[in-house]
Image (tube, rainbow, N blue to C red):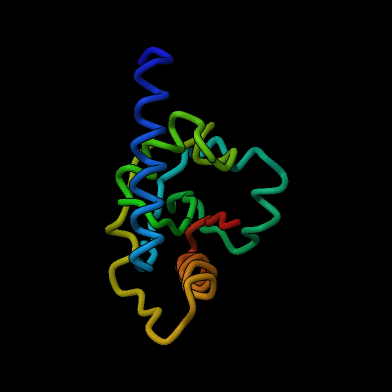
Length: 127
């Protein structure tokens, strides 16, 4: 993708975010599968002491955007955390099946999802 196309995408995402914020649209949780090489990073390993070998490594986030758009933003490096940008593989919304964050604020839901995944032996990062 060339710079002009990237810039156009960013402008579209910014406009969508402004419209969603005006409507007070709810936030979307999402999960991105990370390359297991991320386990070589001490900070990541330390956050996941109960990781079960063979389970996925993931990034958990929350966005006003469609999760597919947010995944693409991470891959392009637009407002991205280092883990999904450098190690992201795919959007993995199916890993959220069975999670119930009802009654929690957006920030609490994001953290609760990361902890819920860790409880299953998955290595999760959440900002």
